[in-house]
Length: 171
Image (cartoon, rainbow, N blue to C red; front, side, top):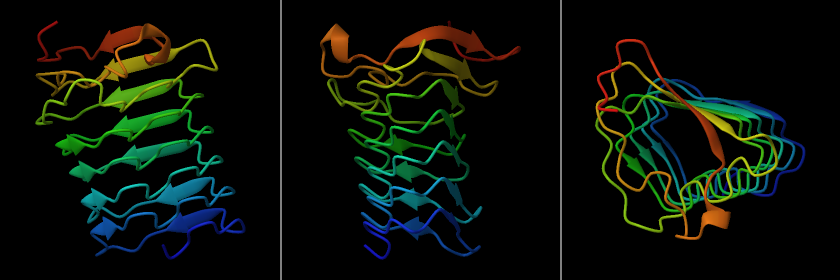
């Protein structure tokens, strides 16, 4: 909870060697616009960036685990890149990211998710929708990745789906 509810922090650059951002580490840092993560980062803890409403873009590079609620309520988030190494995304991870417009999905060995996991519930609701780009090395889009509560009004608003040229994913 090192920077929890810190309203003066507007950016953070984490040094190489850091492997985990702990639970609620930056939760409620409402003025944080930018976070630069090191290549060594493997885990983003539960609620680590919850309600960081000014955060507008995140690229999750070598991270393997995105825990529950990690980016919940990041209403300013517009662009998200999920790297090839992601294997687990916890429930509610991107719940309420209502201004999300682009998801670049590149995970190549991600686990399937339980039904009604709420990972992307209400994502993209405020705009024209989300453009979902599937990376070239993706072979499977995990089951229930975009299944929210089971109610259509809660589903993420995906309006465009693009597969990279040469994508190995079965369409």
